[in-house]
Image (cartoon, rainbow, N blue to C red; front, side, top):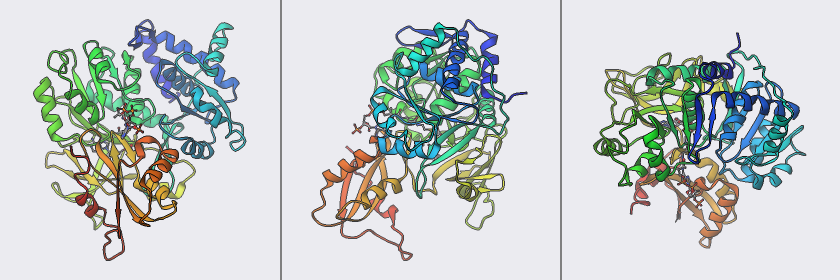
Length: 505
Ligand code: MLC
Ligand code: AMP
């Protein structure tokens, strides 16, 4: 029996081939049999381009229905899908491609020239472009359709075979590719189906990007394995969400989506009356946002917790108390434990390091066995989050053991920005911190030590060139020295206290 995720999705497609599964706001829609056929056609194009089982296909494109088809096509030929944030700069892309060595890189037309320059560094690489029904990959798809070329067979995969690599930064060094298996994705989709009562009668309002775990593996996979329709928005936009709500039953988002919806007067009980479930994750949902949402709509957002390496681990219950400020009990099949500084489990009510275990935990970091080993204790994965368990089994995420900023649901590792800043002339050292931000949850502040003549505008320009826009600090501070403890470690907590109000209006 094949454990290819596509086989699971295909079973749902076959149950209702004519059901409209992807609908766009402009009225275009695609049935289950359209997706099955189109992914078989695109699979033939990818195979002809030399992609075979286990090989990577990296993808940096705007969200579109063809993006969904491409994802399915890579799965069905047993390839490894490697999505990349559209905000990543050319230098960030260069790192990912040289590290992952994809056979095919699919990008938007405006990024192709740079990607082509990497062909000499990545052996066997082919660059193809894809827009919304345009680009060389789309042309090849149409040509293949015209001559009836398709690969219908779904390549058999084992539970442990890699379906996807998602890069996640780290507190030290360069981003690491998390190897996510077919077994991980199938188990996550199954446990979320059970926990959230998801079925083919649900319509998912899909506003998230398709290049991270939340939009791809939580939202899209859940709908696809259930054969449930998706209203695919090109991006998060409050007006589009308001348009889609009366036709949907479930929405998923990062907390910023919900705080932004609350600024819309039209977002009220009537607008949300057709919805059965709003889900939040990727960053902490403030109790005040949860309460304001409840007051406005009469619905309590269901908060869940996960990460790239594990998919989803905990969720508030569908039926029962959705506790604001907590992420709920572990999902079915997931074990959690909270470890104190002495290495032993702490009792309920005490804070410790959160570790998780289960079929949803990834296989390891691409080409980095030592880093993988360092983050596991046997089968237990060390999440890097600090948490607390209540007497009745609810987990609360109370902080991070890792030096990480989460802005608008996107992870930013200060080390990556500090490395760029520390390389600049005149900068002696830097500390990058996250402080409360009314829209993004956390905003980035750069604190620098260096020559009096440092030009902050110039530093910002360098960051913009090297780093994705969401990683560029928005506030700049210069100090004579950074506060340090007796061990010589920079005391970021003191800096966070001092600059806590940087983004308050
Ligand atoms: C965009 N910008 C951001 C930002 N997103 N700045 C800080 N944080 C962010 N998240 C900046 C851009 O650089 C640009 O500035 C300006 O905002 C406008 O860009 P935009 O693209 O038009 O912004 P907008 O559409 O408003 O996007 C904001 C957002 C988006 C919140 C809608 O970031 C988003 O959809 N976030 C969700 C990310 C996500 O999928 N997270 C899940 C990860 S998975 P400038 O100056 O550069 O022009 C995960 C695991 C789990 O964490 O548990 O789910
Ligand atoms: P990523 O590495 O992008 O997958 O992000 C995973 C991280 O996001 C986790 O390790 C947590 O720090 C954070 N996170 C995800 N969901 C939540 C949540 N509901 N509450 C608090 N933090 C969360």
